Length: 404
Image 1 (cartoon, rainbow, N blue to C red):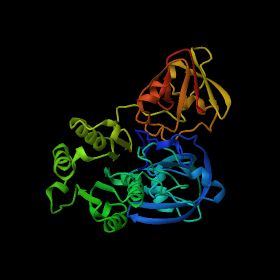
Image 2 (image 1 turned 30 degrees about the vertical axis):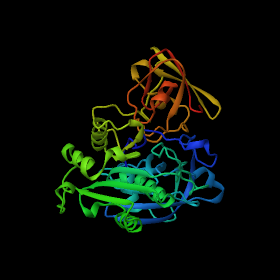
Image 3 (image 1 turned 30 degrees about the horizontal axis):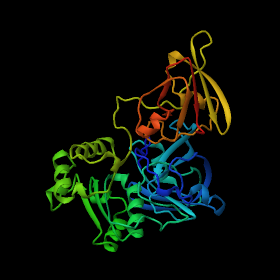
Image 4 (image 1 turned 90 degrees about the horizontal axis):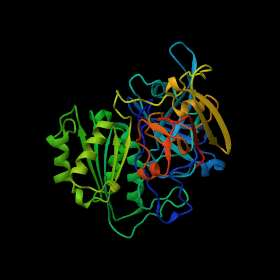
């Protein structure tokens, strides 16, 4: 996951089979806890792996499924030296194990948090870490810390992932887990980067290939570095992708797809798979951002005050069993999330860009317009759930429930 104002996650939620009680829920009420950094490891010139120590009394809060993410919260100084709360979300890059959470942070051009982390973050630092969330997970049976080996092993499974840059982080966790747990799993990874020096987890991927030579296929595609095969050189475009998914990878044999990277790449692969009549239920994707500069981002922290002499929306919300009310000027076109944060700073959110789902709530009454949705499944929308960071009231009064 890369640092952005809009986090990159989850699009197609998965649910472990049989309702296993040991499995962490794909949707869980997010909560921050202060954790200590136990190690910072350099991956590339612009990326680090950060390990947080999880005390035993909080292990239940940090149980997770491979592919999920955590949000990090830190007060950092801006260019003028003023402190501001900064939230960024990063995918967990290791298979579930008790006592720790590992994330990778790649420096983003102009990124306040990622620049600070790459230049200054060190072991011993304390940071607020949100409990794991996200739905970029397999729909095959996969469990967390309590039962890591209990993955469906009754038949062959073929997984394919297409990732770019720091999109490797959740994919690596998924690949490590399924390959170790099921000897019938075959995993293909198409991994796009600018050059070999930019490849995150290069050694770990090579080790995975050495450990499972017959079951793990790794295809490095470098856009700015010549490789022996023209297919693996240059940017992944429609023609190259069609060849990859026609001759190198048999799409008709794939049980599940994992796509993680920038909007353009993810959408290109989705369009290609749709053209080949691949069942969309088999495709899970995660975005860095929407990648569309003309599309509206969620407003968080935007200064808005009640219009005493004008028309206001009445917004009511439920959070942690408590009711909150706030008025939002019709002229401000304020999101429900921004309005709620003005009276309850603990309202959950991570990206404010419509891609992570942390601010998900159920619409109890009233109507809203949701600008973007890259996180909710169609059945969730049909059940009345909305992304509050992208939702604007369209009725005089609106009520949402974050506890639903």
